[in-house]
Amino acid sequence: MSRILTLAIAFSLVFNGSFANAKKGYKSFKVAFYNCENYYDTINDPTIDDEEFLPSAAANWNSTRFNQKKQHLAQVIHEIDPDAIGLSEIENKEVLNELVLESAIKSANYGVVHYNSPDKRGIDVGFLYKKNTMQVNSSKVYGIRFPFDTVTRTRDILVVEVTLNQNNAKAFFIVNHFPSRRGGAAESEMKRVFVGQQLKAIADSLERLYPTVAVIAMGDFNDEPSDKSMTQLLMNASNLGLVNPFSDMQAKGEGSIYFNNQWDLFDQILYAPCVQNASNPISYIANSAMIFKPAYVLEPEGKYKGAPLRTYVGKKYLGGYSDHMAVFASFNLKK
Image (cartoon, rainbow, N blue to C red; front, side):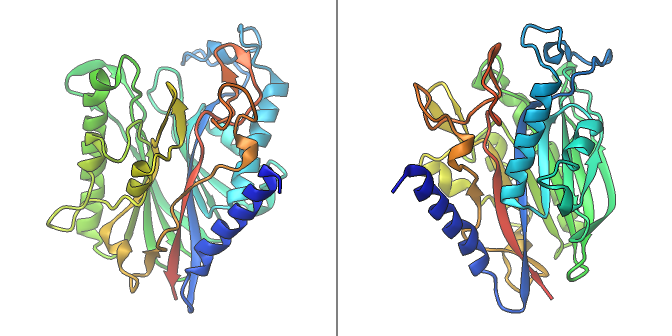
C-alpha cells in the first residue's frame, strides 16, 4: 500500500473519529488555526516593510505565485473544513477577501474579521467563520506595548464574539501570534511571556463575566506547551485560565513546524475550563485536537523529507504551502 494511500486512510479515520465522539443530540463544529507563512499581495504598501514580497524583489513574488499560494491555503482550509479558523502572517483584509472567494471554499461562505496591526512587516492575524454556523456580534483588538521595549511593536490580540446558530450559545475566539524567537529563544522569551500575560488577562476577564461561555484561544505562540509563556495560561486553583489539549503531543515529539532539525509545537488551540464539561452548551470532544499533516503539505524527498513544504526557503521558491502545519479541534454544541 502506498504511503499516500495509507495517510489518506489514516486521515479519514481521524476526521471521522473526531466526529464519532460527538454525542447524540449534539452537533459538532470544528475550530482551526493556520500560520499562512507570508501571505502577501504583490502591491507595494508604503506604510509597511513589504518590499521582500513584490515582483521587483529578489524573490520575484508575482501574481502567478500569489495565486498559487492562495489556492494552496484554500485547499488546506477546504480539507479541514473548519467552522471557524484563525490565521496569521496575512498582509491585509484584501488578501483574506480574495481567499474566501477561492473555488475550493467559496461555497462555505466564510466571513472575514481583520484589523491592521502595528507589526512593521505588516503581518496580521485574521479570523474566518462560516456564516451559516455563527454570527459575529463584535470584535476588537488589544494592542501590545512592551514596558521594557518602547520601540518594538508586535501583532495585536484579536477577540471575536460570536453566537452559534445551532443553539444560540455565545463564544469568544482569541487569535494570537506571539513574538518570534529571532535573536534567540531565551533572549526573546520575555516578550512572549509578556504577551501571554495579556492573553491570560483577557481570557480570565471573559471567564469571570461569562462562566459558562466558551473562550477558545488559538495561535502561533512561537513557544511549546511546556514553555513559560504557555504554562502561565493554564487553569489555576480558581478555575480561571485555559486548558491545552495539545500538551500531550509535545511529549510524543509531535510538532507543527520543523526548524534546526527538530519539531516544535508552536501552533495550538486552548479553551476555558467550562468547555471540559459535557453539559456545557459548547464542550470539547475528547482527543479531537490534531495537527493537519497530509502528504501534500510535506516535503516529498531530500534532506527535509516529511518537513512542511514551504513557499520559499530563503530566496528559493518551492511553491509549497507554509512553514507551519495547521491545527484543529472539534467541539459539541448542546441543543
